[in-house]
Length: 327
Image (cartoon, rainbow, N blue to C red; front, top):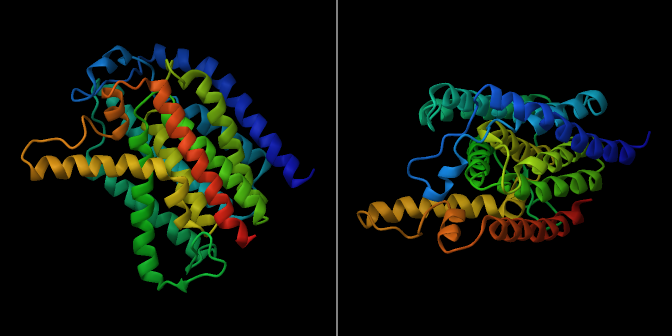
């Protein structure tokens, strides 16, 4: 069986598995009363979503894991480690969601607990990548043929930890509207499929292909009006997958392009908090992250979804042409 055929099978299998799992998982989550609690400081019009089952990210997590384990793992460390990173972050998210559900509140792990676990997961991933010879310290910039420099190991690792934790939490921030994080991450996964194929890293193409299919199956239930939310279980898993693939393919700076929405969402939050403190109570945006600002401006969730996903798709196309010169 050819590598391209395997990738296509993973894509289709990921979709089917995720869609089928949803038929069983959503009723099970309802039976367990694993409903989402809505933030007290969040948009009041989201109160109607209270009680919608959360932890639905288990659908695409399980689908992609099954596809990778049954068809893609062939002794290559980079694909195993990327999957491991995503699963570690997914586990952190699961713990956070579980505490929220158990205590019937919107606060799970404390910020310090979550950060400590995320730093540990990031350091473990980078250490494993380093010792298996799968981490490059050459700095590549999209649209530039040759590496611009070789970064000192300790500096690279320190910055890499910051990038991993920042990216994962940025994806988590994006998960604030029905289908938004899953919709935005879908073209990002498609980019990594095509980039991995271009670099002849077919094993690394299988995981994002399976996850892309899994996200498609999940969107059947998660698109507005959502029947299930991915929860931190899903959003942290997605963040780990996105940033893990970027490092495994030696293109972490491509996140500036494919992750444009993640970056905008995070910056809007930072600007809002900073402006609030500097002005002693004034707000730069009507509400942050920025998707809530647009909601308050009268945009529907569907309109925001189309624009955010469309912008991501455009930037992913640009990113593909930016890295194509490396093939």
